[in-house]
Length: 338
Image (cartoon, rainbow, N blue to C red):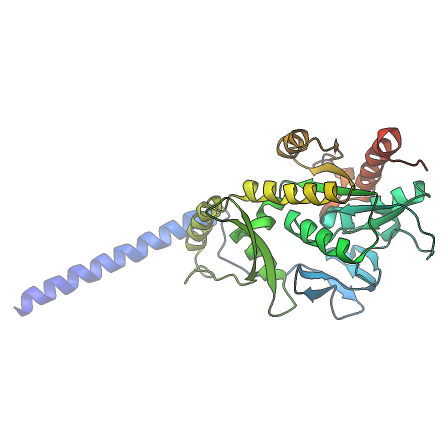
């Protein structure tokens, strides 16, 4: 009996040792291929004055703070960003009380102008050319179509109605509209606001869009912080789960809501493609007879980003965005010319 127990124990020990060796081999292969365990690494950003760049917002999750900020990225690359009392980036230094037709430009960090100075953003450049209009830069870092819809709906309840709304689309907004695991991982690692929510869209059993709020929490699996292959498996499973969230369908329903609002309010809507493959957004614009213009530039070209300091569009890219939009505005879109 004792001999049999010793034999089983010995075999169990051998199996455990084999398993450990296999785990080491698998982990070694993943490390050689440059896979890493989960790491929550906040971006290398210093903001002056201290206290951060964002405030919490019960509807949108967060928004830019009012004020002027000096921002330093890695290797001492810096830029300045000024926001008005609503937290929107300014498009001119002079304050004026003139009532002019407004053009609202909605988008993410590409529109806000992360990594370029105020006067280098394309909404600023457009404002300098279209003197008879007031340009409002609604762009906010990390926003997607769901934020644009919520911003627009709320603003129209309180503000002067614009003549034109420009919606700058990028395909990476799909993730943001459903708050995918990938997006959740990024936001949680850079969150300095404490307990934070993010809006996301789901489609109910009747095919209707429901907008909910989710806590910004990302939970790595046990050992994912230590073992690269465990984190790899977690990301793969999360990727397949994200496929069931129907991000393109959610985005389409959000865009349809924006189209409906603009038609009800008699606001001209212009949709652009500001990054990547334009197929989806061009087809949507054509289907719903919305004017469309592709303003994207090739961000693989050195002059169009601030690499190696930052991968966002450079001032030269913003000049291209402004030129393409101005050409469209002045040739066939605006009711009044500069």
